[in-house]
Image 1: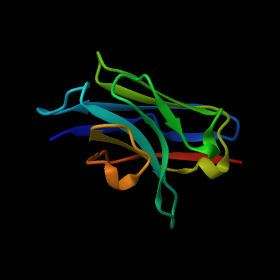
Image 2: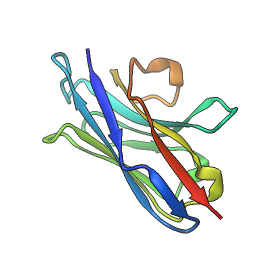
Image 3: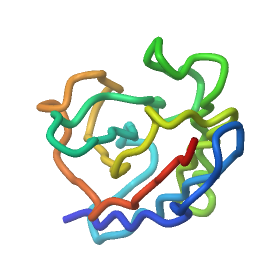
Image 4: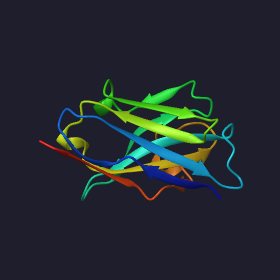
Length: 125
């Protein structure tokens, strides 16, 4: 099993920044096996892909709506994944989920095995 715990959410004004963190742990977790990603879910909507990163951090994938504003990174020495969010907009308001899968990074929600509980991000206009 893999445990994922997100932190760093909160209330911010439009144009502001937040940095989400995800701590990974578990008996079977090994950085070199697991791709990591962030998804988000707004009220009444589906859980959508935001960003993903390969196990070595060499390749990242960012959804078009946040390109140029969000950056995903990881620190394998600390078993941490981050989502730096800049120039936040009200439409970024959602619960943000950290997720992992054993294998290549993917933009598909169904590809991921383990999920955190989520952290709320609210952007006021």
